[in-house]
Image (cartoon, rainbow, N blue to C red; front, side):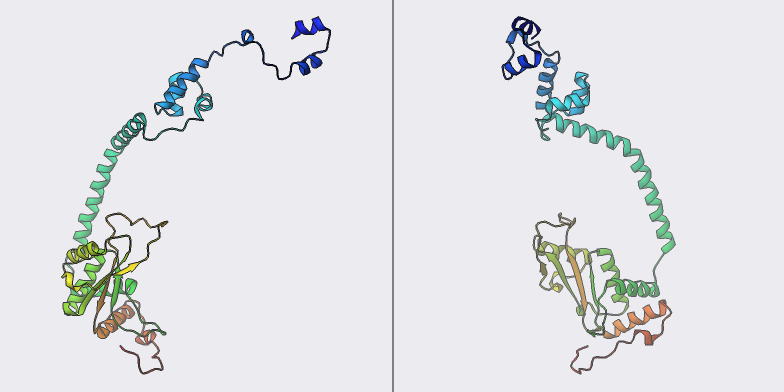
Length: 273
């Protein structure tokens, strides 16, 4: 540039305007010292290397490595990516193995102590527990819906077993107990019926036709795996007296009078109890 400027006797800015867009001669282009590293980074990225690994391997800054390979997305299914994930899992498992052993031992000790503290439940204990869990999860009479019948709904098989034990101690014949599951249409309702029947130790014939709920493809539910069995609805026929007993037990537990739990009778005489 300086030689041309002196030879032609023009200003530097005028010469720059004349040469705008004219590529420099090839002999004037000097090679970049990092061209070989850039090519190597591209090759490593194609093999599934992360930006951090490339930077460490080539001895360059992470930002430099990222600038070289940012146009190449990392393939999560490459052999190196899978190997790295497996190695990371092994390291994590090894790091937490001792913690898990200690945690499981502590949890087992708590379970053993709780079992000793609870001991054997008598009829009174089951009565109180059964009434409490029903008042939490069961259907209750309302001023606008005066139906005094036991109907217990839950997804936890342990709570349902406890409720059935409560019914047994309340001298409810198993023939008066009916079951029905409510489940999303994306699940296997027949398999869920069999699972609940086996888990509760009741005949499969005691289950009515399931209630199928419409499934949303985009759902926030987490219970969508093979462990999803829907919820079970336990209905007890001719259970008004037992419902009154549950209501009375809850009143006694909360120190309330029976009058606090009296539900206003509807004006219509056609209400079926």
